[in-house]
Length: 154
Image 1 (cartoon, rainbow, N blue to C red):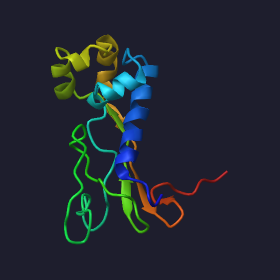
Image 2 (cartoon, rainbow, N blue to C red):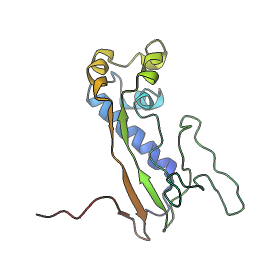
Image 3 (cartoon, one colour):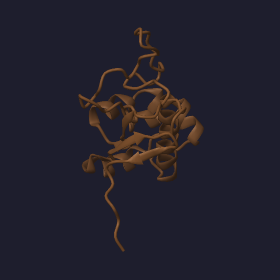
C-alpha cells in the first residue's frame, strides 16, 4: 500500500522465509537467528521484487527524488532492486522464493552461516530446485491490486 517502504516489505519476506525454513526443519535455529545470521538468505538470495514498467526491471528503483539522489540498498541485501517508499501508480513485482542453489549452498557448508542448516534435509529437497511465486501488483490510493491473479469462479 502507499507509504510502505519496500525495504520493510523485503525484510518481512526474509522473516517469512526464515519461519518456513525453521518450521520445516531445514534450519535448526530460531527465526531471529535465521534472519540475523543470514541463513535464510542462503535460500532466498534475491530481492522480493522490483518496479515494473517499460522494462521488466524498470529503472528508478533507488531514486530518492527527481534530481537523481539514490536510496542505498541495505548492506545485507545487495540483490534488492527497489528501495523506495511505495506510491500510488507504482507497479511492482512480488516474487517470494525458496531455492536450493548448489553454488550458494556448497560454500556455506564450511562457513558459520551453514552451522544451523540440516544438510541431509537440504540434499533431499535440492533436486526440486525451489519455488517462486510471481505476482504483479499495482499500488492504488488505498492498497494494491493484484494484476496477475485471475477471477476465481465457484
